[in-house]
Structures are given as C-alpha cells and as structure tokens.
View: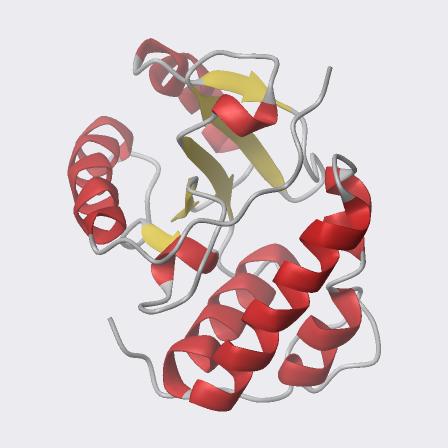
Length: 183
C-alpha cells in the first residue's frame, strides 16, 4: 500500500524543527562538516505548501571521509538509505519503509556537488521570487493530483520547472544563476 502525495499548508514550525535538528547534527558531525547544515526543499520556503518532511543537506569536506559519519547519523535515529550515492550519503527518520511517515531527510554531500548547488540555488530562488513560489506550488498541486501515489513520477515531473529556474537544460547541469540568500 502506498499513500498519495499530499501537500500541507506552510507551517512556520518547520523552521523550528529544522533548527532543532541542525543543532544536534552540527554537534554530531562537526569533524566532517565544512559549513552549516542547510534547510532545503519546500519546507524551507516560507509560504510554500509542502510534503511535511524536513529536508536538509550537510556540507562535508569529502564524501569518502564522511562514510565514517554513517554510524554517527544512524545513532541519532536515522536510517541510511540510497539516493544519488555517487553524490551523497542519504538518511531519513524515523526508520520506516513508508516515505510518507518520514519527518526528516538528510544528505551529506560536498558543497561543490551538483546536488548541493542545484538544491541550494533552487531554494534561494523560491525564497526570493513570489512568482516562482506560486508557479511551483500550483505545479506541485497539479502533479500530486495527477500522479497519486507515484512519488517518483511526482518528483521527476517537476524537473522542467526546476531546470527553468536554474537556467539549465537538464538535471545534469549546475545552475547558471544565483539569488541573494534569504533565511
């Protein structure tokens, strides 16, 4: 059984949940980090409806060195999963096989990685531009309705919009634009 993709109205508590998690992650991962843990994804964009899962990225000096952090992160209640293993170590919690029961997701990745650059620039663009936020929210609502329980199709079908915002042709390219960062 799979649950349908469901969006929740923006909740200011998402920022507080991220901040609480950021503090514990930065303390536990200090020896591998080269910067602060970042809140990414739709829950990081004030005013934007989202699946209520706090997405985070932690910038590590080296992906190979950060393999030693897997044990540390799992001790914090995360399960190690697989998502873009060539670019990141991926985790989620709580430990569940159902994506819709997750509350947090974390990627450990190098800040020069394509994953890091695309996610941070896209988040910053949505924070800066109301037109992008409204278009993205409508797209997500349409896709949630059209794709039902198919999370992979829901995610994949957002690619054209993401690429437009980033000023690239496809998901293999780094952003050619930047936006002034807002919290």
